[in-house]
Length: 402
Image (cartoon, rainbow, N blue to C red; front, side):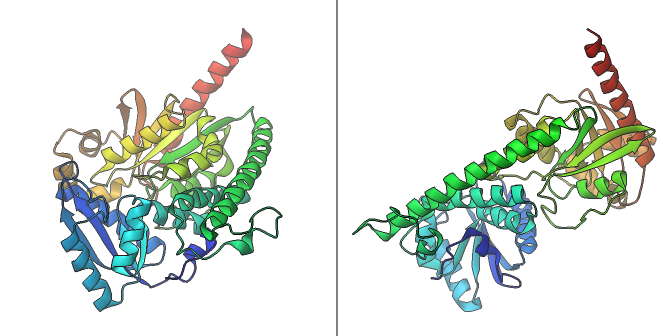
């Protein structure tokens, strides 16, 4: 089986290739939730350019240690792959190195798990030197424990460095050493870039810093474009924004810096979070967060929880914030489904729709209900942001006076 010797090449020439999706229904993850996660996984596959031709689910108490799914399901999947000439089998959970090796032999196709798929998408989205370096580092960290003799030899990447391989040394050990060397160099490069970023942030310390955060594909970039009136990529794909984008914005004569950062997602690979911590410092060092929420999504509360967990992981969970419930126009189009999904008629979203009070307070945070694409209640959002910026400026003045 062909293997690439460079993680960045994993994304080449994938457009239109056939893929199947595989997930488990477990006591901890019921059928409805598994179906929802597979829908998201299909969106991820589409973002990477793959064509999903079938989904497989199996009920198990826990993943099979050797093959994730059971023996019978593996045989069923293998027969489908052979008959339909499927290129990729994508699993919704992270696979162990041994599971990947076993599945490659049994299924005779490329094996991806959710983590690797996300890493691949990040690699095609990254535009800046910092983001590209962060993604490459995360890919190599993911790759290292999964190396087998099936991987193409990496000698072309060592650049002729002396001492990289001794007489009789195994090819696998050589490959591991090459990757470990690259990881060390990438970490050094990131440290240098991070120091440059710190210097740049010091130069704009006087302005209030506002950061957009949220689950992926909730409309952060659309709102960024609307508030900053700048030309920013807006795409109905997951992780349209990977690089941190900073713009100066003036609302009601109040200037501030607005930053759009990478969206969060369920099961975001830990290596990616670690590698992106220097980029996510833009969030941690913000004075105010705009937490953008897709109010039309059936699982918006779970998405809120995932964002909150990630903010806690990077030490940004105690920052002031405004909750921005976006896409309310889509709720109005499908209101009954939303009510069934929330199992209530008195949620903050429903209250806003019923009463027309499109601002409120939720869990101590100001909340605004908008539609960025339809320009609904944007003035109300701008007013709320302005008030929070004024509050921050007053607090700074009082602190400086002592």
